[in-house]
Length: 526
Image 1 (cartoon, rainbow, N blue to C red):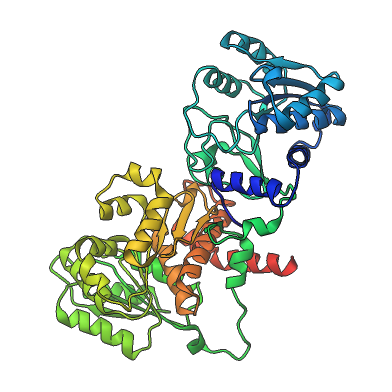
Image 2 (tube, one colour):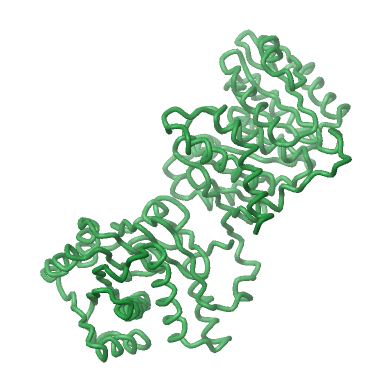
């Protein structure tokens, strides 16, 4: 499913009118009807409710006038507020105001901050408030009358139902422009916008309805629309069924390199997730100081030791590098994961850089392994055969870029796109609403997952899943997208029965199989 900016959607609306001769009145009527249908789904007994519709100065306000009419016809007690004098409305918005007047539906004009008190009195007697103040095109900070109005509406107990996007959210970034309506639900048209999906905007949306208002579908097919929402349908297509006569050699060989004396658990977590993700054969290389304990705990993984430093990290000696490269080549390893638990040892960083400068198979780089990109960028990028997947969280990304975490969080999509181009990599920037980009600026945003997954080790599990999928033959970009969704889905399944304080990585890993089964079953049934 495509995700658009506000400007992209505005241009599509204009082309629907100019190129396809679909009148603005038709689009506004469709938007109003579909909004009411979404409200009926959200509130099955809406015909018993008192509903206040707050209409702003643009077409979003015009949508509100249409909504008010249809709610009135359903039997709702409807009150309408206009945020500017009714004689100032133009075009189809003015036409819909005339229809309200003909139906004797009164419109209260909000003309000054002092009149907000009357609006708040109306709001306190309302069960539902329809927010039709601003649409997705808001790009300046809310102040004055609108700031007071939004803060006032947020203070009342009524449910808020936003049209297109909660007023105060920038539809192209998700930023809060001073203040924003905290909606119980939002209906948007044709596709989600960036502001619905990325934080902090996503936290104001409530339940999101995406309504078809009959804009011709060819208008959404341009190459410039590179941002997508990860869907279950997309993921299911990547989880192909195995042939009955297949064997382990058909599903690749995966290798995990990681661990240290201090962080011996991280590569084990990655390996347990890898085992649930389809690779035919699984290998692991760890520092020799933790080899025995690792072998005893992971009987399904062929585990080997690498020479350790005195601190218990992987040494950068040539023997270690040659052993790893030779093993990858002679054992036909098809995907490698490096970094989990390696520690920030300079020797481990140098070892990682040597591997990345020579490796020819896809490699998923995570955690401490990411330090090599900062310290040895030029050397690593000289490897023209490098097929890199990186999985940083915002702090790790900030460290690589010599930036701040806040700057990364404020510009996640742009940073992810730029990083992918700079490193010729698939970049998976973890967090609430994980962003995945390739070097051609194609991008997906994942919405599965929950706050119970904010625990150490979850990223190690994700890296293991990605590596397993790639080893089994999935392209790197598709593997990152698919793994991110399934990782989150498994977390959602685990959190359904385990309190969020108590969920562990093993709880998530135990749900990976169920997550994949549900996804494939749902799509087969559909």
